[in-house]
Each structure stands twice: as C-alpha cells, then as structure tokens.
Image 1 (tube, rainbow, N blue to C red):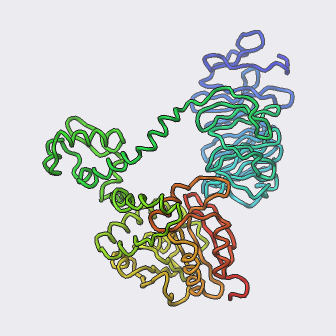
Image 2 (image 1 turned 120 degrees about the vertical axis):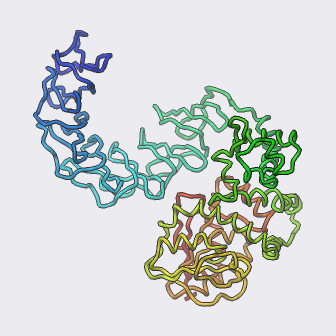
Image 3 (image 1 turned 45 degrees about the vertical axis):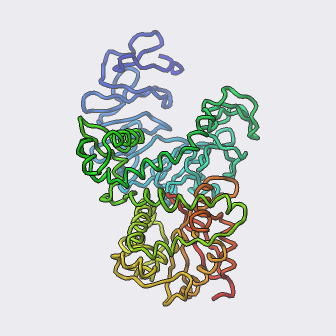
Length: 556
C-alpha cells in the first residue's frame, strides 16, 4: 500500500483496514492501536493475549521482543511496559536506556515525560537522559519548546527546554501556549496569559478555549457564552446568562436559614444521637415529634442526614457536626449561630465609621467552656488547612520555633512531628494553654513583652484579628523575640489588589474582631512600620499563603 495512505482501525478493534476498505492483513488481535508513519513504513501497536508488540502493514511483528503494553512510535521511539516498568524502545525492539519508570509518555519534539518510583515527573531527551535536575509533581509535553510543570504546592507554571522557568507566575491550572497565549486558571477563574505569564485582560471566566485566529470562546460565571478577541473585548454573545439572578439573590438573603438549621441540629444534640428512629430521637432530644420531623427534612435537604429504613443516619458531610470527629465543626456551628452572628448586626454602624471595641477574646478567655469550644473549632480549621502545608515551611534542623497565639497547639504539633530535630514552643494565654496537651508551652500575651528568643516565630491567622495599629505592635514584639538571623512566618489568606475574593471573610473580621484581611502590599507596609522586611511570599496549596519577614535594615 502507499505510504501516503494511513490504515484505519476496524469497528471491532481487532485489525486494520486499508484504502480499499478491506482488511489489511489476515491476522487478528485482541486490541490494535493506530498506525504511525516511521520513516518509510507504517507501524502499529497491537496486543494478543498477554503479549504486546508492534506490527507492519502485513500484520507481521517487526521484532522478536514482547511486552505487557506498547504504544505508538513518535520520533522513532515507542513507550512500552515490561515486567520491570516503563521505558522506550527503537524500531528493533531494543531499549533506549536501562532505567525503568512508573510511567513514560510519548516523545514530542524529541522530548518525553517520565515519572520515577517516587512519583516525581521530569523530561528526557532523545538519548533517554534527563533534560534537567529538577523534579516536578507533574509535567506535560513540550509544544514549541515550552511545557507546563506543576510544583509540589499544586500550582503550575511554564518551563523552557532547558528546564528553567519561562516566567515567575504560578496558576491553579495551566495550558501550553497556542497562538502565542496560554489558558490559565486563577482563584477567580480562567483567562489567557502572554509569554511573560501576565493576563492579557482583567475578566475571569468559568471556562475559556484557546484562541482560534484571534478569537476565543468563553463561558462567564452566570453561564453566558461569549466570543472575545485578543484584547479581551467581547465581540459577540453566543448565549445569554443561564442563571436566575433574582433567585440567586433571594437565596443569598436567606443564607441564615442554613446557618440556623445546622445550629439547631447541633444545639439539640441530633447528630450525636444518630442513627435513630424519629420516635427515639424525639425522646432523647426532648422534642415535639412533628416539628423534629420537619427539622430532619431540612437537615436532609442540606445533605447532612439521610433516611435508611425507618432510621435517620448521619451522612459523611454531616459527620463533621459530631463532636467525636477529629475535625469537628459542631463548635463552629454554635459560634456562628450565636455570638459571631450577633456581632454582624453592628456592621452597618461600623461601615459608617463608628468604632466598637471588640471584646470577643476577653469574653472567650473568661469562660472556660467557651475557651474549650472556641479553640476546638480553631483546631479543626488548623488541622484541615495546615496538615498538607507543614512540609513546605522552610524550617531548618535544630531551629527554635515559636507558634505565637497558637491556641491549643494543633499547628505546633504538626510542625514538631514533621521537624523532630527542631524545638517547637507553643505560646498563648494561660486559659488557652490549660486546654493544650502540647508539651513545651509558655504563657504569652501578644501585647506584652515576649520572653526568650527564637529562630522562627510563626503568626498563623493572628494578624487578621487586629487592626493595623495592633498588628504593628504584635509584629514589633515578634521582631524583638527573633535571634540575629531569625524570621517571622505569617500564615494568612492574601487578598488580591484586583479581586473581591475573600471580601466576605474580611467583613466578618471587621464585625467579629475589628481585624481585616490584607493584601501583600498592606502586609509590606505594616511590616516596614514594625521594623521588618517582607523577604518573600510563598503560595501554598491552601487558603493561606506564607509570608516570610526578616529584620529591616538598621533594625538588627
């Protein structure tokens, strides 16, 4: 047959068909993949029984070796799976290299992706040698000399053929470049970026396709489909919004329905008593059975419980509202349904400029049961948000680390466990420390003199509870507690200058504590006023980012 005519796979997937619509050969296989042109002939991967190999257009094997799986030839090389792992072979069936991998991709632009036994990804050149020393959590194929790589924190960027970063921008998701632009996803949505990693317009979309001859199809957050040009201007609308904004707003205004339904279930001890029939539950909770049935339907609508026969059962989601759960949110539901919700009522006056001295911390400290409940809530959030990021903290062996205002020690425990050669100390108010089981704890008031010095002081979601004046005071105390080359690690959610993401949490802090969420530039400003220098900001695979502070010049 002609080299120009590519055979196709039969409907049954057991053989190939030639240009005359007849079987290309007499042999039959359990599975065939597409033919690829290699030099002056077509070669296809096939499998028969437990053996995989490559055939020519006559259906004959092109070598004697057999594999568990094999794939198409690209740039004269094919990925195969043998008894000892993945690797590449040439047309003679000989291995390109002796190394074995957990995964091997196809060669594209004479470069391929592999994954080692440790689950780390990197690229090989045409000789089977690593292109660079770095290892990635994931990486994709090269296109026009550029590939997408994903770091350990889950964020993605672009590299060149030598393995160096093309730019310093990192995204939640990322595509290769097409027509000069790449699709990139931020917390706010999808956009297109240039070769410097900069968005080419300010809008963010629910989805975005690559540009095609200067135009791209995108979906907005309300379901509309639009065509945009390379400046981001909408040139055409293909479909109007699919969401009902009236209903959405109405649902937003009655958000407290959910808050109070959950609060009532926890307050009455419903989740602690399940599974149970409605009759048994009404007796143990001392509730009117008809009204309790209505509450259970509400909890069912929220996906927190479900019915199994004549019994109500806690769902996986609802299990977080049981006190026995290691990340229980039962205490959070009480806080949000009582004191914290009441504090929101002062928001209009606060927005008008009136000042209220927040007493939330003194109220909590004065009530031992509230201390226990409040800090159990904070511990759940800490366990959820910090477990996967502790390994990314730049703590060195043997360093003295202070977790300042660290509550009952969830983060301190995680750090001590991951960095056993370091000395970790937990500092907080006496009433809080009495609830902590952490071994090395010391009484600490953020606004009084701190004793002793440390290599690292951690302020985890501390500064956002305070206005700038108080935050600067806390930072000054932290600076005085640093050793000569010490650093302050701030773990906080970073507000973005050009985005409203996180604004509701910021309003909550205004109402509840008098504090605020801050942007990077705001952290830089308050740090400078405290005699500190913002050395770097590290994005983490969590709601929080890590800001590293050092003593500023002339503040040694």
